Length: 168
Image 1: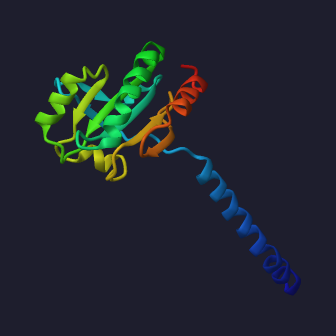
Image 2 (image 1 turned 45 degrees about the vertical axis):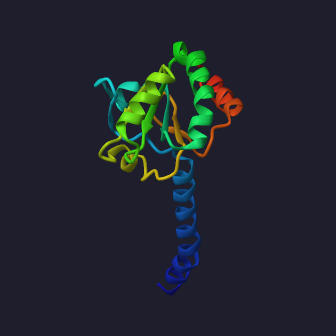
């Protein structure tokens, strides 16, 4: 009986350590899933995130008073036009503090070709982890797993490489 207690104590710490390390490795390799949200675009169209499965999805949080957002918008438009027929969806989410009139005006004058929504209630900001800096962009694979989160302006060379790797 004494030998079994010594044996079990001797192996208990390494076993617990191994289990904890395996759990940590699993957690680190798991990519977060896209939140189960429904976007309502400026024109009243609803888009459910789960309905975008099978596409690579780029969600861009932006504001009309954000210089980085405005600077990257032409490249975002070009990227969307290049990949829209290759199972890529772009949804631009205007921040809650941005006046909806300004969002509509910018969307119209810049002829944004992708879906745009105004997050009037802050629900999207919250669903995507309390986004508070713009631009912030999330990219999800065809299974709805997050590939990247970028705070600040996008690196469009890297973005196009990522989209190409996804088979787009």
